[in-house]
Length: 198
Image (tube, rainbow, N blue to C red; front, side, top):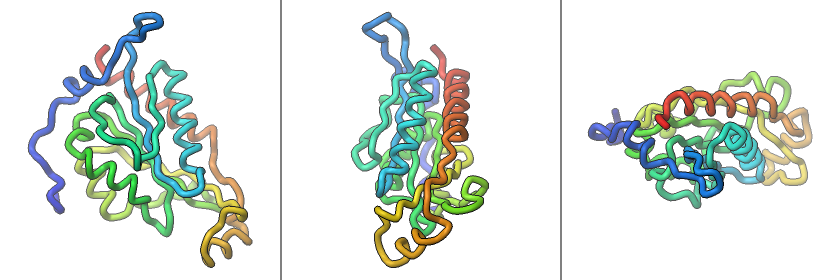
């Protein structure tokens, strides 16, 4: 693997899972910790992360939804979801840095990635490739296929000449498919339950 991302053999995922559980003080139920980290500009990606967190909590997980720029180590979590807004086919630097800082730890736990950004007709059928750096990181941590969700382009929040021009046309609006997002989150919940020993 290029860029020095291929490290020595990582800790087993079973060992990582064992460190990422706690006993609820309410009913003594074993809870599995999950991190949902996001990076965005206008709040659209944060709202997707919050909905993913809601679905995972409903599935019985203890979930932290955090800005990627404020998230530190991932070692307290049994599974991690990282999402970024797409700007001109680029991930936000906060999300990239989170993956870079935690490459070894992420390799020891299941990771799901998503990005949001396509707007206009066909936004939710678009498949946007990962930027080159994120592609390398995703391979290094053995993340599955990145999910692409439609984005939101609010004319009132548009910045810069190009963004304002796009906000005047058919790309303006909210193109996030909430049921698809929720279904994806529920699938993550099922997969984590099947992989994490309790």
